[in-house]
Length: 193
Image 1: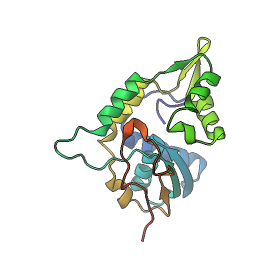
Image 2 (image 1 turned 90 degrees about the vertical axis):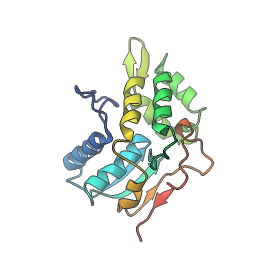
Image 3 (image 1 turned 180 degrees about the vertical axis):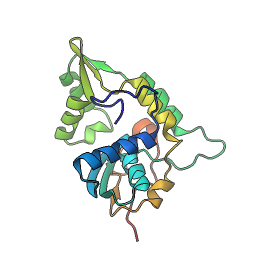
């Protein structure tokens, strides 16, 4: 995804999720001969997989998602959860003395504490960049905040119901702590009838 890992931020600052879904399509076309593929996605990755399949039905045959970001429409008096998530993202600690320090911190904190050690290791190895003797998140807190701010422009829980995947699973236990305390009730998975 743009502004994640080793990819660069877009010059125009566009962090809308339709762009993330388009990024998935480019990768599927390049490496997966256009699909259908089996896919795994966490958080933004899970929500973007749903949006990618919605935009190109049949590209993804199975998706396993862990804490996909999917919100239903807000009530008129409700502050969008994405704004709380943006604030938390901007306050996120972005640097550590080493990948080991980052790994040790994350393995003790929800929601990453329930990940298999190999998955968490890959997240730390590829989600951080070397930064003058330290390591920093590859996706800066500011870009992560922009992702959440632009979320509501593209994706809601209704997209899950409209997407025809053989299997979608949020992959977290019912009592798991979700990012920013977001309630994922009702978005537990979907299997077409």
